[in-house]
Image (tube, rainbow, N blue to C red; front, side, top):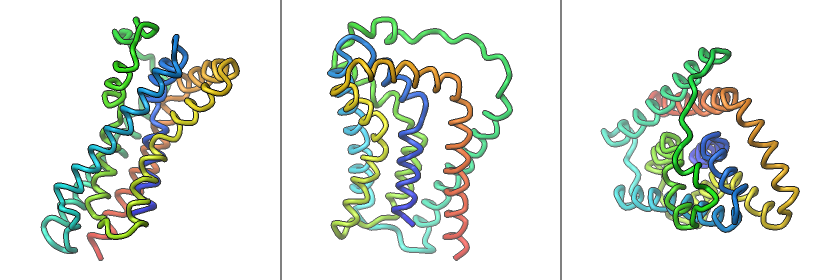
Amino acid sequence: MIVLSLVLIGLAITLEPIPLTAFILILASEGGVRKGAGFIFGWLVSLAIVIAFTVLVTQNKPPKPNTAPSLAALAAKLAIGAGLLVIAIRQYRKMGKPKPPKKTPRWQTSIDNMTPWYAIGLAPLTQPWGLVAAGVSVIVEAKLSSWESYLALALFCVIATSAILAMEIYAGFRPQPAQEFLARLRHWIDTHTDQVIIIVSLVLGFWLVANSIYYIVT
C-alpha cells in the first residue's frame, strides 16, 4: 500500500502543470540544458531534504496503529485527500469561464540571463508542496529497515522527477527536435491545464481518502 501510494503521489507531482511549464520555459531559453540540470538538481535536493527531515523527526519509527500519532498521520492524509477533491471540484466549476490576465513573473522576463544557480533556487519554489506533503504523510508510516524500503523512497523521487528528467535528456541529445516538442507541449499544457489538475486531483484525492478511511476503520 505504501509503495503504491508513493508511486501515485510521484506521478501526480511529475504531471503538475505549473512546474512543468516553468521547466519548459527554462529549457527553451538560451543555455537551457545547463539551467535545466540546475533546476533538476534543486528539485531533487529539496525532495531529499524533506524526506530526510521526515525520517529524522520520526526517528525511523512509524507510529503504532490506533495510537494518537498514527491517527494524526491518517487524519493529515485524509485532509490532504479531501483538499485535493475540493481543488478538483473548484477547478471543474471554473472551466469555460474567462480568466483574469496574469502578470508575467519577474523571473520569466529575464530567463535568457538566468544562471544555473538561480534555476537551482527556483526549483523548490515551483515544487507542488501540497502533493509533497501527501508523500510525507505516507513516508511517516514507513520504516526503513531493508533495501526495498530505501528503493521505494528512491523510486518516489525518480517518478516525481521523471517528466522534467526525460525532457532534459531529450533536449541534451536532440536539441532541435526537442525545441519543437517543447513548444507543442507548452501549448498543450496551456490549453489543458484545468483538465490535468482535475484528473490528477480526483485520482489522488480519492485514493488518499479511501486509503485513510480504510486504515482508520480497520
